[in-house]
Length: 558
Ligand code: FAD
Ligand code: NAP
Image 1 (cartoon, rainbow, N blue to C red):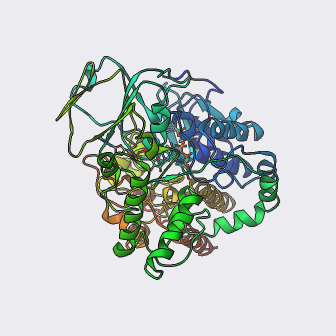
Image 2 (image 1 turned 180 degrees about the horizontal axis):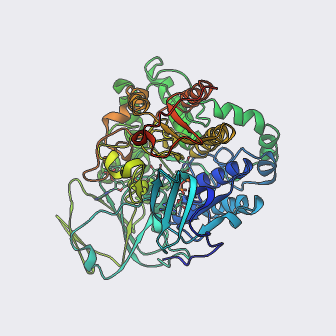
Image 3 (image 1 turned 60 degrees about the vertical axis):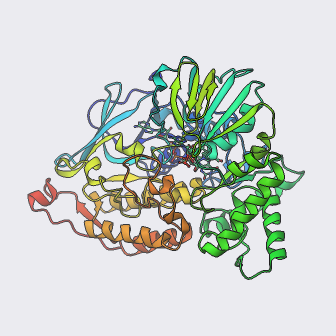
């Protein structure tokens, strides 16, 4: 349990806004709301800012959206002063960046660290959110902003015998702050998603033995990480305004260098040349190679074949290469990006266990027993992902009007309007949560768009003496349809991934984000221009009790 520090929130009344989380989303919201002249308190479970980059300190952790894009644009001074050292910044550098932002904008004075929010309850009469934390602090605020992260609730599978393991157990998403000495250890790594792919070469380099337990093979593209050439960053800084505007208007909020052509409209030789070109470019921009590989099964087959070939070229043992070749379609899970992932399996100290043919039977005190063998281990590393998008919010006891519980209203999957508001939960706004393009975009860009939009909504409310805003049930239901429609053409919705909730046993199968950042921003602009269509507003002076007291919420037109 981290030690609680920072200013103590005052007693029961208190701030105009409370923000849960001090990752990039929480910091962006703090900056925006303070800019409106509101008093804001941020509550953060960790001991510092940074969110994902505070917690995910596993060896090899780095962003896979280019640093120059995976950064804030809200302050030109910030982006001019900050100098990235690598094309894809490592976790320590990303954490330093977050700390720099916090210091530069004097954010820490408004953040309470080491406080995990356990409940948020709306008082209809007082028109206030009451927020409590795990150290029994309580504060009230008119607005409650959930900036608690879409990938911030670690998931660790229950495996028979896990409790009996006598060695050390680590999770990539809760890596010890001061690092771990793994030199010479026999390490078992479970999970080969983005985290496992980044960690594998680093764990293999520790000198001991590494066994990778793989359930689904990864599509892993090299990042070709590097420093910047002389003058390269200066050029970016000179053109940041234009570049940011361009990225803002793309479907993913970042530049994937889309070719704009179909994999099926070129001959095999040209297709191969383009795959090689995008492979050489590296990173998530590999997805820009053809416009139909994520949509059309026939086009998709060509990219699967390319990966099969690539893996065989790199991995010397044909049986290992075959196991490492994904059996699911490209783009039905998130693309992984790493450095030396497939190459690691050529090392004599690295083993691969394909769990589909050789499942874990149980964990023993000194290792893992699979259906076919026993693997002695000193350390177990879980890279098994997150209860994504909804997990973190559902761990907070959120109660809205009439005591309605978020856990109940979301029982069949998340229900939001624009991913921002929820019917029954006035003045509760979510940043980069379900129903938003967040995780299918450059998340920082998506966060900034939300911070701006929510800030505008709050400014509108303040100006017009509106004390409560929440979406209608109808707008929310329509948004569910829009989210489904946004992705209906994608193979992603046919596969099993955390975007669909498939990685968590019992979680409803729902496509949780919205696909298409630029489409989404256009919708948000239209909603705003139409006087926040889909929201109901309640003015100051109206009797407390909302519908129960006969108050008819009215929509305020612009
Ligand atoms: P987070 O960074 O998750 O921050 C949420 C904060 O809320 C955390 O600090 C958490 O402690 C706090 N919190 C949660 N619940 C509570 C509570 N109840 N009480 C108090 N505090 C709470 N996205 C990209 O676009 N590009 C990338 O390259 C990329 N790489 C990633 C790599 C990793 C390893 C991971 C895990 C994610 C990555 N992401 C990436 C997605 C990443 O989640 C976002 O980019 C971004 O960091 C999200 O910021 P956030 O502030 O919304 O959430
Ligand atoms: P993840 O993508 O969900 O991967 C989890 C891995 O664990 C998968 O290989 C999964 O297999 C496996 N797994 C889960 N339960 C298991 C079980 N019971 N037994 C065996 N294997 C099991 O999680 P992640 O790697 O932490 O990444 C999550 C997201 O965070 C990414 O998609 C990305 O958005 C972000 N991220 C980004 C980067 C980056 O490069 N910048 C790095 C890390 C994370 P199945 O696939 O079969 O379920």
